[in-house]
Image (cartoon, rainbow over all chains, first blue to last red; front, side, top):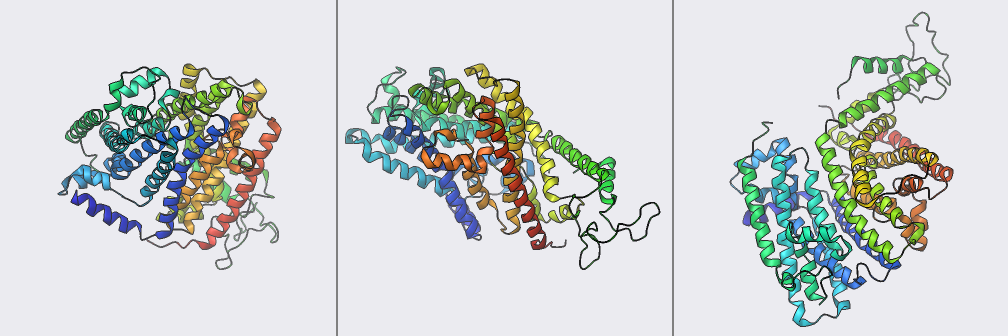
Length: 261
Length: 329
């Protein structure tokens, strides 16, 4: 933890050496993600509801998913650069340093531009919440779901990184699950096919990032008729996925062989 | 990059073609050109052709043009081969593009089920558009990059590129076309095939639509290259070009039609987006495929932007040539 903060601060100071590009990157990151919101707004120009959900509800789903993903990406997202480090041989350097390789990977090139995404998601969530008129008896779920979302996305990032011990030449596969998971959860899952939704509920538990808890917060029927208690199952799902990810990372480190370069 | 003897010959042919090089020795059988319009631009200081500046190809002999064509065709071939070494990455990219295609298709299906016939597309057109746009990501390099140029500016290797007896922009374009051809095979066909299997895509309207789509695809890659070339060249003025890259990414994603079809954009935003060069990368080729717009007008639009941006690129290259300071090493 201390190592993480120290390294993060070092990287921040390094990136502050070129303030111009840094500001442009932060704005760029904010704007790229604002495009998703623009897309949602354009869609709602043409229709009043998407998959049975209104604009404010979709924005709520977007905001919670976006905030979880942005924070997970900020803290652990760089794990998906593992293959670059393996190929260039710099992963070897990390292994011999007296700090956890995972921490070093996660904090590598920590940069301010990652705040852009977090800020953007937080703004969307802050705008959506007052419009929903939620009961206090249901609001308590929101911080919990964001926290579980962070753990789930961080685990997916770690799994993606662990996968790169095997697929050193094809790191892009991980993007399908990390960024794909983020895109998937930005919309109500009711727009997707029921096989896909069952897959992300019971196999890769992405439905627990925001969909299942949001059904509780918004007090909605499950369009797929899944059991009611699933709405409270985010914490165990997050813990289970984190355990799998930790095992996968360890297994990856154990079978790691340097490229020798 | 591996350069074969034949390529070296090719370069030599270009270099020694009449008119590109002064003939001080007066080699028999090759009379020196009269000084004047046809004489190559000579470097003020060294009295030799300015390095890397073939003084334009205009007004050259047919042999010269043929040699230049052969050279660029060969560079394109090498671009294709160089990228074919990253097969696993291309397959992984195709997988990711397919997954995103499926996710985006469901969102569009939900929209078109709520509003059938929206924006002149029916449901099948919308899903086809979605998978086509995913298929364009590879060849059009929608997420930017694809050129080694900015990295070479930073490392100083661009010095080598600038002394080559060929235009830097045309050389990069040839290389990029080779890259696009390879990625078209590995990253465009799989998502389209999966999309067709899962959702049933629309086939092009007929042979004419196929032809105009193919032409639109090539022009789209040229426009995409010209934009990325300008972004990459900005590294000559800014040490860290990642800021420019990320702003370019925003405009490309939004105004190309990658995020949503441009004909969904309301009012002036839609008009603006249709007129900007980025629409030549995704929206126009997809519309040509679907037969949704006049082929000649659409291709003319792409061609106009391609010419304008390449001309701008040529100007910027000239400016960069004066700007670049190569640090010896």
